[in-house]
Length: 325
Ligand SMILES: [Zn+2]
Image 1 (tube, rainbow, N blue to C red):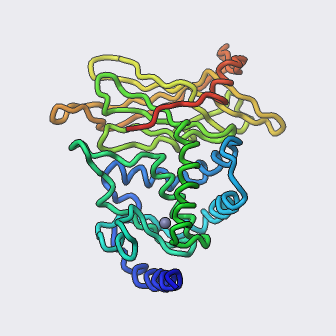
Image 2: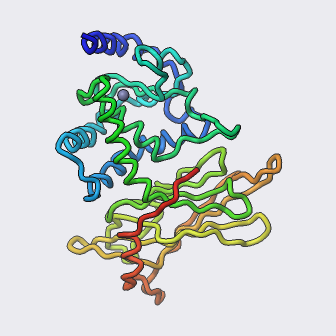
Image 3: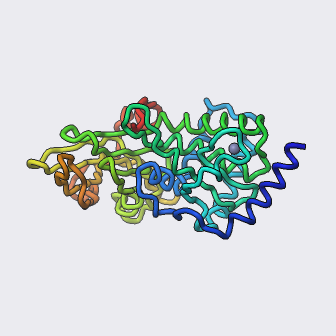
């Protein structure tokens, strides 16, 4: 009975809310939590593909079916250009639930996903805590799950929470972060996915973040121009000092290049980010960012092809324990 009432409510809600555009659309959210939502939303299929290929996760049949459905319907989800909305209306997140939710959505693929602005920066110590990438992943996975016949019953909520935690847990081990020592609020963060896929990469000054994932993908080139670049991983990242308040971020890359029959991994290339830093109320902030790709060029005598098995193994097996704060 309860379930029937709920379904009716959801159907009505979809129609009554859908046309109102109550919140900010994607890209209008100002803070880091919002940015993390947009970042994960945009890269969702990558995270999902990565989780799929983790044998340790042991998804059961029901989980696999839902994950596959979510994966296959993402392009349809994205057809709603205002799918992700940040809303400041507690009632939206309270009724008919027993407690205030972080997110709500409806039954259909492409339904809006409302994110509760009031819960984006919870604070226990006076310092607001940003919702992290892996938290966002588990929340969005949960909400996408509702688009595939998983209703709001207690068991269903439990199922989606567990599934979200599983997928997010896989990612948690892959997040790498490099803080700038003179200003720990400034950091680079990257995630390496499976072979033959492109790392995501962003830098932040604690107030805004700059998504450099596409720049990394688009600027990178294989040592041999006939080859096709099919993946980029970040092997190492470190900040270098150039002068007072001048720092460069250097990413050492692995490029996965295909000549049509074989894929080879090449080391030796770098992606360099040069942020312009300036003090603002005693905090160092990023004003603007330049970046560039330094190729590995065998014609120049560079040793490009990676014979370094250790580095390869590092990328393939290392688990990381840090998570952005
Ligand atoms: Zn739910």
